[in-house]
Image (cartoon, rainbow, N blue to C red; front, side, top):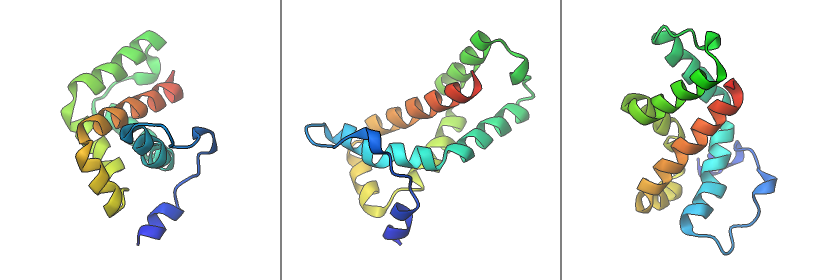
Length: 124
């Protein structure tokens, strides 16, 4: 089962090695980035569904308003953030989850920051 989860993740070549990095940086580069890349299309669909449920004309907003809207979601909507983190954490292996538990606060911030950056790069 572990090999299956790891085998479907995209390889991100330009990350570099995890030597001389903190545990958090290593976890981000070896686990979080590949999972976020794997889940990219789902993340986009999740966001589009969120916008549709909220009945927001997102495409009609200016770039500045889109940026503000996305920033406010990541600041204020705890349900959105919890579901998004669940999409990522659900792709962890058992050993990755064990590592995550010791750095969960930092890892959660990194997950949300990287997801927000992905959404902004797609929609702005």
